[in-house]
Length: 440
Image 1 (tube, one colour):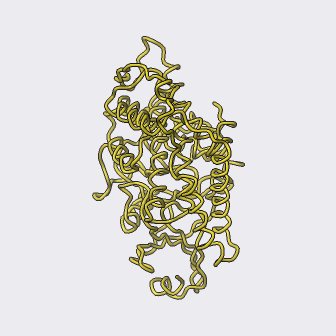
Image 2 (image 1 turned 120 degrees about the vertical axis):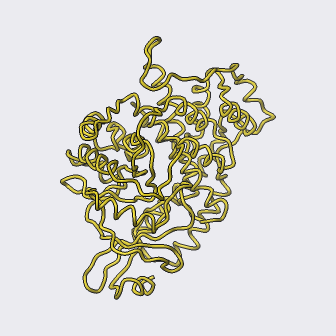
Image 3 (image 1 turned 90 degrees about the vertical axis):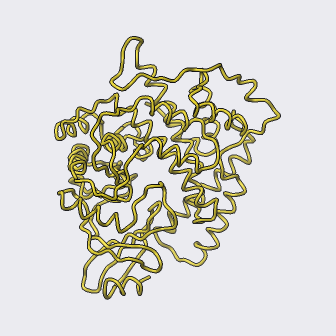
């Protein structure tokens, strides 16, 4: 890799692959003249359908810096490096690991996040940026998974019936959250990872860091584990004049959970289909249940909050409940219930490949330690499932039938309670600690 980078950048003193990165590699590169760079290099496959190419992301980064956004300075588009597209940018200082940031978040960070978002949403959209129906895109991505997920179906339907349609589309970052921000003791240093930039509703960006997955265990601080939502929203509204309120954020927060659940499932399919074999991608298939549980709980609490006769700013739900689904029928013994894939055998095989291909040939480093922890988690999930004998409430045929009904807007009564019971059973295998610490 050093030789390939040197051919593009000049003499290289060192290059090391950094841990993390769901779809792109990040290389810390030190040139012989002392210049410190970060090279983003394409992986195999992408998380979401409309992911930008590296050349497009380089252009977006250039536009962001020109607009005064705190973002790394783009240095050089490199074309192919060892067969994969890449570009170089300045290597910024600051912490980027979410679980470390939320331990002691800088007090100024929430308002600084709002200020950077306001600048981002003022960038003139580039011609090549994706546009269109965000919910429709996630339906397409869910269909690509090839298995039914009625909880996600219900979340998408619930959102589609409540989204504002009147906001002027803006440039959107697409993944603005803790974990994609470089942070130091003074607060936000730089906004990273622009591969999902698009033209859309700015509320998508504003709500995205509220998603529980991006709180990194600091669940009591709803804004990315670093602070309260209200000061952040107030500052953003003061700078942009958009008047976004908490009701609107609630709808987009549900969509954010559906989006990340689908992202986990699509990444898992990269592994299962042999496109990019990775123990990280394999385990992500089991993480989707966390977002399913969260979106169902958000919907239940939002429904309880609204009183009869009080009309929210977004459109009232149009879903017409159908007949009640019989739990006795759904639990009949002749229909085999199923957890989400990967199966225990597939998880074990993923770990076996990982140990053989990566642990044995490579000495100790940060990335290897991270992936080893993931591999250990995969084994733990397999052990729980094999030892418990518990199965989720709904069988595969019921899941498929229920998903079809919801897609056609024939929503059964008691759907949230039924789906939560099903998802809870999945979580007791994949991540019981999630249920134990879950609270609002």
